[in-house]
Amino acid sequence: MRVSDYHFDLPDSLIAHYPTPDRTASRLLHLDGSSGGVVHRQFSDVLDLVQPGDLMVFNNTRVIPARVFGAEGVWRKSRGAR
View 1: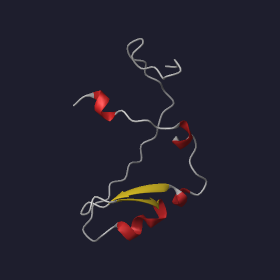
View 2: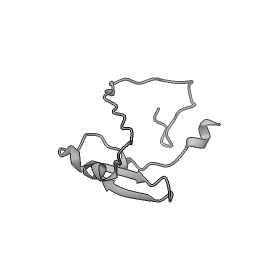
View 3: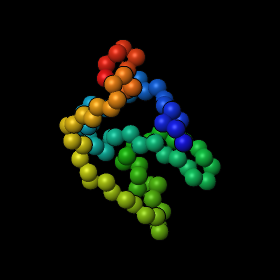
């Protein structure tokens, strides 16, 4: 695998800078494992998707306000920002 395999364009307008005031209104991307279909939902729909015997894993980690700089000139945005 190469890092370039994970490159995709993400418009700035789709990057969340703050959580939504109503957390249950958060968006949820649902991948149907049997059909491969993708459906855009809201997080409040998650209980409709859980079946008996499913395993739910909760991530309660927090994002820290930190930056990591790599090799000079390697990680630059198209406008020149690091």
